[in-house]
Every structure is written in C-alpha cells, then in structure tokens.
Length: 228
Image 1 (cartoon, rainbow, N blue to C red):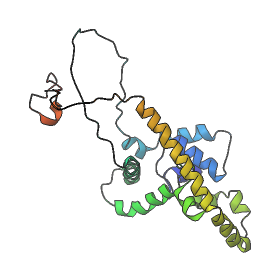
Image 2 (image 1 turned 45 degrees about the vertical axis):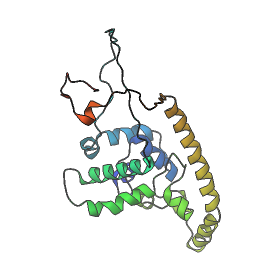
Image 3 (image 1 turned 135 degrees about the horizontal axis):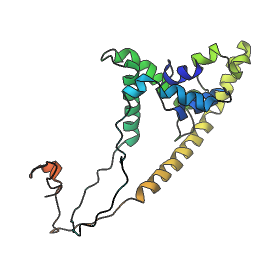
Image 4 (image 1 turned 180 degrees about the horizontal axis):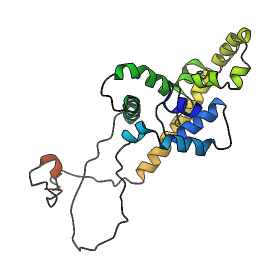
C-alpha cells in the first residue's frame, strides 16, 4: 500500500523505483526487502509500461569500419534557455499520461494531484522538496495516516503549531543550503557537458556545410546526404 501510494497514489508521479524507494525512506518507513519489493511492484505497473519513453540507446555494439572517407561537417548548438522548466513539464506530462492510462480525456482532474505530487517529491538538485522550502516542513501524505510514521505517532495537537513555527525559523537557512546544493549541481552538470564540447570559430567568408534535414534541398531518404 505504501509503495502504491508513493508511486501512483494522490502524491505519486509514477516515478522510477529508486526515486520511490528514497521517498519512502524519507517518510520514515523501512523493511528488509523494500528495494526489491519496490522494484518488483513498479516493474509490473501497466501505466508506466504504456507510457515508457522510447529508448534511443544503441541495440548492438559498434563495429568500426574504415571507409577511408574524409567528411566535412559543422553544426550549430542551440542552448536551452530554461532546461529545468522543460524537464519539469516533461515529468508532469508523463505523470498525467500514466494516470490517464488508455483514456484520452480528464487530464484537468489529474493535474492538481500531479502538481501536489511534484511539490512533495524530493529533488536531487536541492536536496529538498518544493513544499518544504516554502513551508519549512514536509507534507503529510495519506500513507502516513494508514501506516503511521514516527512523526504521526508523536503528534501532539497542543505542540503542533509551536513546532511548525519553529520549523519556519529554519526555513531561510534550508533555502540557502538548497541554493548552494543547486549551484554545485549545476557546476557538475556544466563540467560534464563541457567535456563533450568541440569549440568552433568562423569568420566572414568561411565555407560551411548546411544541415540537409533543415533545408531538405536534397533527397533525405535512407541514402540521402546529411549535409549540403
């Protein structure tokens, strides 16, 4: 029940088993086979299988063939203005699709649930959930009511408001630490990306190849040229 709630319940995004397992641990749950149980449970999720992304990974090892042909080419990189926004939108669309299953309507009803799940899911870039950075405390999800965690068992109505206010006092510090972690994460990503960069410079009068997929000046069939 806990796995299903975190994976596809009112606070679920149909995330992968690693994300679900880490979130379950952060809620305070643990059992000896939790990694295996979570993996096995999510592997048979029909909605996840139905909307799984198409793999672009090579299906076979590369066999080098020396054709002794010299090719001239160039390419232009278009940096994304807001890559994080695109990733978030992709995750939200994927979660809505998974919730709808084979249905093609009703996404408006699923959107609030997906947004709630997104806001209460731990983000690797900041080490926090968006909800906790705003309110200073983690949200309680339905699974914690059915199978009580430590904070539910130790709940005291008289002390609850006082504890929430105390958490708010540390909210600014948590936000600063999250910003530092996010900056460090961006530096790691940039370092990894820069390793693959092949810098090119041009001056007026240089001759270059143009992408044939963009202009389609030549036949773009299987044997068609990539550049013109």
